Length: 162
Image (tube, rainbow, N blue to C red; front, side, top):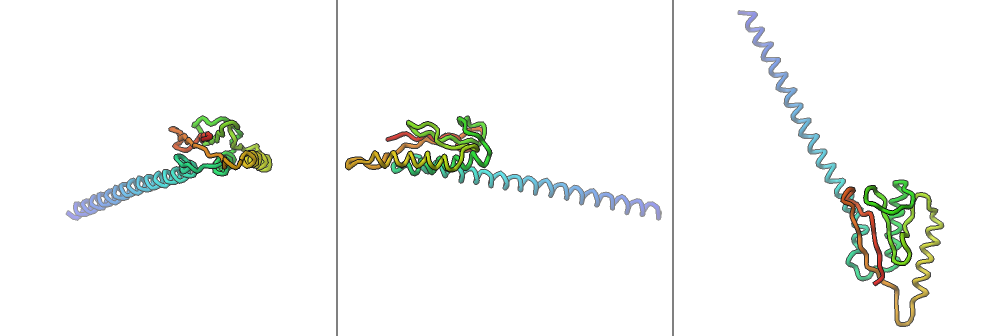
């Protein structure tokens, strides 16, 4: 009888240990899934915040060369961050192109120097200012932003004169 009671105590201890292990596994899986969802939400928020830097210019009647160059600077910073040389954006990676009507792609890549970009951008501004007359002001632009279905990020910005 004494051996039977010890066997029952041992079996009960094993069952309790299995229950604790099962509970620990369940909690681990639950917390892992929740942290994964939180991480996904944070990443989506960051992408939306990044895209807003460009999409805020869509449907805006007051976009000037200064705004276009601001978008080109943001694109250049992005391209340098990811060490992309100047190229045409495809939407398959994080490269961003800014197309200015009559000038082509004006953003920079990892090999473009800040000084060269600044001189080029100053040239665009000077050209715009020199074209101002008594009857015309600054040129305004319509902006079209394309978002990649692959990365969910802006990859192409097209600026056309109005």
